[in-house]
Length: 201
Figure (cartoon, helix red, strand yellow):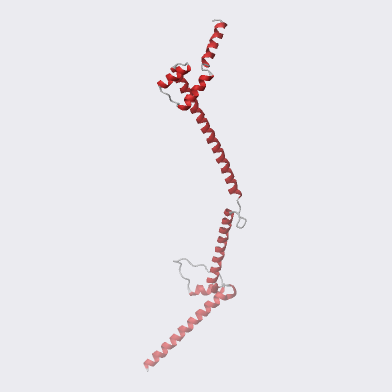
């Protein structure tokens, strides 16, 4: 096969590729706008009017429907892409607004809540210390409650420990208590003796 035959085949291919004239394409487009799925009878009538075979009319409508579907999908993708970009920009703007939002009167909400919580903790600790000091103020020093089950101290141990307290305040109060108790016991013994002697007489 020489070069002349190759050129003839290329020209035939180009003729086959451009098989429809502009007037035929215009008539086919008008028919497609009215009905995109013509039946066999409609295709035969259209091919007879345009000088085309019904098979070529059928293929043209198939290709045109495919082309329209691709165009619609491309337009839908472009719309979704633009909508996605718009939502992303709006999301970024809202995020920046939330990060930079500061109330002029109360300041940032997160930092303010943390500061209030710390202030409450400090205030609670101070109130606990003040309450402990008011509750055990007669003893002259903070008093820690002894756990249950701890054996009680004897009188001698208490008296000995009282002399080692600063300024002798706790020891003095315990000595007065013991002295008062001794006087009460002595008075009780005298009353008992007097009552016994009276009964003997």
